[in-house]
Length: 314
Image (tube, rainbow, N blue to C red; front, side, top):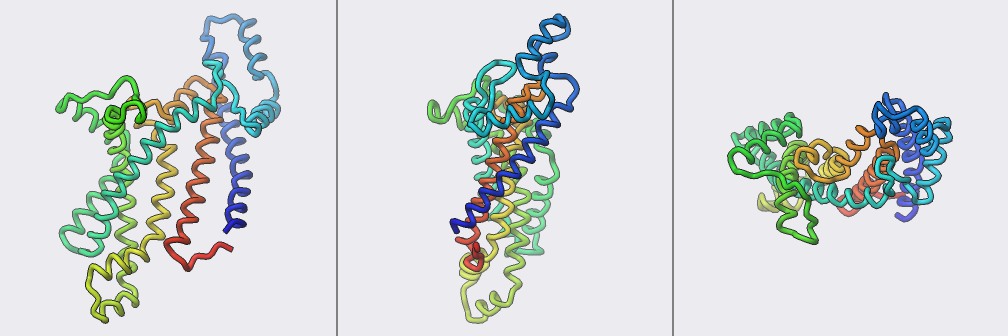
């Protein structure tokens, strides 16, 4: 197990290097640059040249990349071109908001999707199964920004609810924090629930059709024992896969929802950085996301062994 974890951690290195190069080049291919965004159109050429040299943007791209990645390896993600502040503390601060949003969204989706998927599989080809499949298809099909906008319009026009202008930390004001987080988490959770419900239904159905389930039923086992003790346990591997993947995607896919609900998360931080051509902010944040995504996938792989003892890490 230790050697497996070590190999997986070592595999992160080339992946992170590839992502860092891709993000670095893509940011520098976007028209405009950080100095133009910072100074506007009325600044003098001398001032532009001075800031370009100060930020190291006059160097060849490979030297700029080398300087940046050397700092990252030493734990220094650089300073924001716009604010001049260190990026890493800001990333960690905003990641807490995104992580909380993603975690609550995931919990909502699991609470909705897994029982509904099991019920749809057990009651297959019934009205309940049909309704559950239509609802799951609706959740999968509708874009999160459309659902977020519709929900926000409904809440503001019918319920007199407006997003808070200032985010409150859970540890400073739990009730206010949950009031702010709940509705955006509900939007993301509903979108995520569609895929989880479909996967749960198909996975449970596949197990229910296997011979060992027929044998257990032939021995006179009660249906709830067949479902919860045998079928569900053997169905969890693919469900864990999609839950882990979606949790990782969710961490990087909250940009629009965070902006609509005015949440100061990492997604909004990246979007602002792109608009302002703040290269260190975007590069550092995406690299951080990639690292977290890799860790989540590693955890998912390790959970497999607990769920399915047939899986061995050698």
